Length: 474
Ligand SMILES: NC(=O)c1ccc[n+]([C@@H]2O[C@H](COP(=O)([O-])OP(=O)(O)OC[C@H]3O[C@@H](n4cnc5c(N)ncnc54)[C@H](O)[C@@H]3O)[C@@H](O)[C@H]2O)c1
Image 1 (spheres, rainbow, N blue to C red):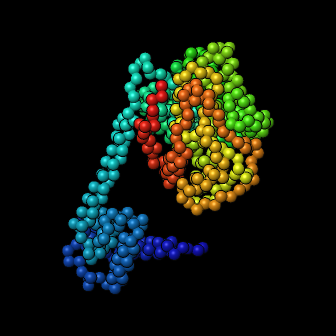
Image 2 (tube, protein in one colour; image 1 turned 30 degrees about the vertical axis):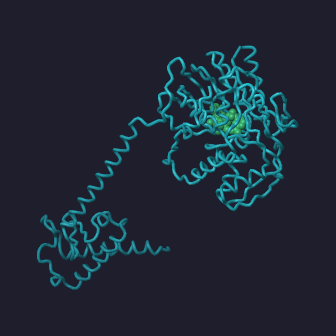
Image 3 (cartoon, rainbow, N blue to C red; image 1 turned 120 degrees about the horizontal axis):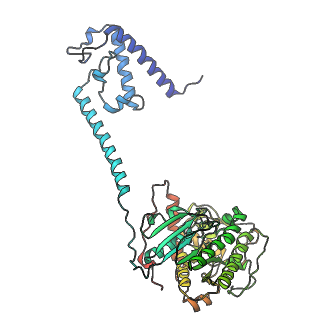
């Protein structure tokens, strides 16, 4: 059997203590008179050789245990010249420098510490009961306040929409199954009288009274929607039927979050809403692309047949705080790689283009579209187009690291060009993106930097809405 050095020391100390206790007990007897076992006039010379040796060992053991508080509770409590005192009725003699007053003070200190800890625990408990502080939302009277359901409201885009509508003074209900969403994204509203969070999978019907519905529930990034393609199709078909059915029952207006992916790998550039798309119906992205196409078809079928008031937003690539760290998309991938000084990986030549809009621009567009009477699909995206290579360089320079940019083989069905034609949005809903790329990227880098530094759950999502971000659009 091999002992570690530390274990061996502990074992020896324990053995010596036992032997010592037995020897001393035999030679001195037990202090049963209630006073200290050593009493007045305790004298070294009165001890024989064995006793002297025992006492020295005792002092050595005592010193060791004082250095390692884990060995005895008493040594860690009373510190320096400690001794168990009268409660120690095994007859162990005290060290020379034993001072009962010191022991008493240390015990008092220990008791005070214990009481402080107990008070701290009670304060924490009471703080949990005090109503939390919320951002100062606008007060809307009964006539102007709407009850708004956001499916997928705990996700990236949904949570920003929640913030906007809450700040406007509406009642917001989020229904989310938390597949890709997180409570953390909306936790700053939990408990607010205008806010409600429902754990609900939208493939099941939902019975609720609302005025408007933003239907955002669906995984949005390739790794997430490819993870369970059948579920992705169900969410975008059955889920949309449930939402449209609810809108029909309660007479609510509904906005469907569609996607630029309905254009597939487009052979028209930029893509206007009139373009019917170029989608591979059996490719790896089909569950999402075709799911969203059916979602649009269902919306117009309900509009025509059941007179449901629908809006369809074709959302292009969006980025911003609360994006998923691991969603495999260009912006999050590049930022995280750059922040960690890893190589920035480009799939393919890097010549393929993308256009990215900042999330607050998208939220403005969604709200403007809902408020408008225009019912045909509307592209919401930023038309400023850049190559993937450019993005990699911009992000690397913003982060300030020394990451290399490397090329990996292209992925299947990766669209080569993506750029929205937003003339319809400009004309009918008076919308166009406003946040410059550098500004949006800075905020996003900042968010990811904090997320990477976060090490535990108690670092709360300290959301403070910037009033400038919550402009009155309608
Ligand atoms: N972010 C983009 O760049 C982008 C681009 C085009 C379209 N969109 C669309 O916008 C919407 C929001 O996208 P996002 O980027 O916020 O994605 P996200 O994954 O962050 O949010 C989606 C939310 O839907 C929830 N959800 C998924 N399946 C659900 C189900 N069956 N029932 C209830 N909730 C469910 C998720 O938990 C998550 O909270 C999606 O419909 C997406 O297709 C987003």
